[in-house]
Length: 175
Picture 1 (tube, rainbow, N blue to C red):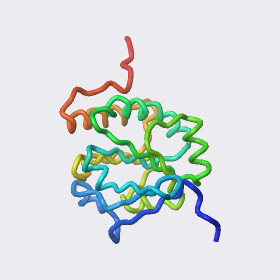
Picture 2 (cartoon, rainbow, N blue to C red; picture 1 turned 90 degrees about the vertical axis):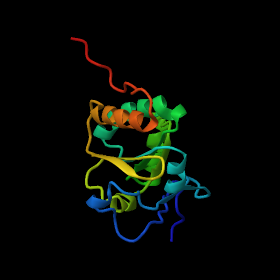
Picture 3 (cartoon, rainbow, N blue to C red; picture 1 turned 180 degrees about the vertical axis):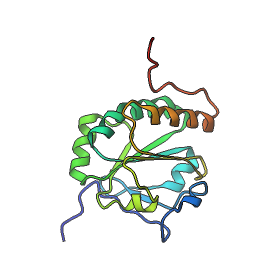
C-alpha cells in the first residue's frame, strides 16, 4: 500500500453523521492530522480555545474567488481567537500546491475521500461551519458567494460570539 502523503487527514468521530436537528448542538468529535502526520488537531480542543470556522472547500474557481474574503476574515479576528481550518477535497499534493501558491494564512488540510463532509452531513461545496467556544455549531452556510457575502455574514456572527465590532470583509460599493 502506498505511503500516506504528508497532508492526509485522519478523522476520528462518533458513528453516524451530524443530522440537521443536531446542528444546533455540539459539533462531532473530529481529530485532524497535520501535514506530516505527527500532530493532531482535536476540534474539541480548538473550540475550547475560541470559535472555529471549519471551511469544507476545494480549489475550484468559485472557492478560489471566495478565498481572499476568508483570508481577510481570519486576519480580522485572529487576535481575538478565531481559528479557521480549511479542509480541501483534493488530493494532498494538489492541496499543498494550492495552499502555497495562494499563501493560505490559516490551517489547511486535505480530505480527498470527503470523510469530513459525511461527518458534518455537508451537501454543498463549499460548506462553512462556525463552531463557538465550547463546541456548539452556531452557523452552517452552504454554497459559494464569489462576492464575499458568506464571509461577511460569518463576520457578523463571529463578532457576536466574540462580543466585538464586526469587521468589514467586503468593501461597500460606492454609489
